[in-house]
Length: 441
Image 1 (cartoon, rainbow, N blue to C red):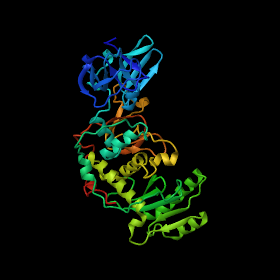
Image 2: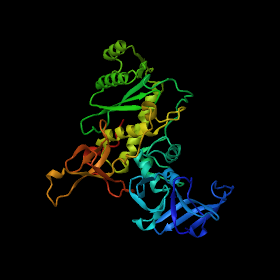
Image 3: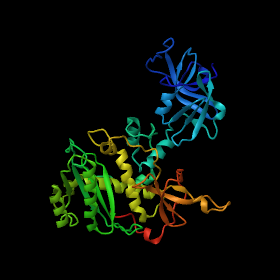
Image 4: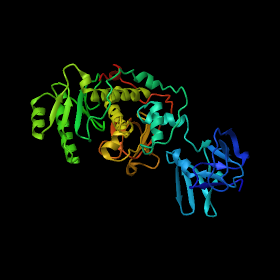
């Protein structure tokens, strides 16, 4: 049994009693005991090389342990997926790529070392590649916050991550500014989602969106901090978006909306808003003129979304006419990753009552390949179209992709991604209207 590794769903960590397996072994500072068998003592923890291409880390060395055990629980904690079915078992990574297969061994499964292919694999979360991948997928979220989130178990699909020291992201340096301090809020001022909505318009951008939009309306729920963004050609379109959102939220919840809060801009302070609020029994609260901190919730959200969007655009030199796609993606990500102060849950969970899943997220601006309609292809024609990933569809479970050849955005789920980092070539050739600078929002 000394050369056989067994997959065990009952043990809490990888372990072996054979010193020869360890490529590195560190003594433990405090005593730890294994609760089955003869209550053996953990003598050290280290890395085990099962083959030239497959290794385990954080393996316990338990002297005289009669079995070599791979812990299902530890694999799941590291973001891997273990699938069992009759007569078969396999381990998949976060991308659902096969890591290794297991063979029946009596009533259990043993690791099949001959099934490992490709580059050397470690059955742990990578301290460098994985943190970079998720940093980019989550809109260049700070490394410290990303590691904290991954350890809290609040977001499905996000594996546990570790960060090496002194990680520097150049797009973050270009895209993020030091924010000024804000008044500290010591408690949550509302009691349920939809009670109070904050709203503001920002723009015009120096570069129009492909569809001719210049402004963005940002709406934030006070309780959950869940946000919505709407893109407008003219500011006075704000009323229509707010009206539709308010009516939809009222239909979704039995709890009454109490108020909306905005600045004194003409798009908000007008007879249409006044009549609408009166008819629904809503209080329309206004911040004092030239006092943005009084509408600070949405002002801070504006800064967060624009900062994330600017950084994502910078990474692949995506043309600035796609600023709205970046802002929309930033909002989609922010709703799923940022925790509401004092409540310890994401905005998504507070609004929908379930944890968000980020397994499907990909790095904004990366190369991707969209499957063509097979019914219109000859035998030797390419099966895909080159595209650039621009975010997520709002009304379906699909991705938004800019097709380079057709120069149009499509929504599709038949797409594969190339998120390789660093990107050595720009995704687009910049045109003249993109050289005026970052979107001025």
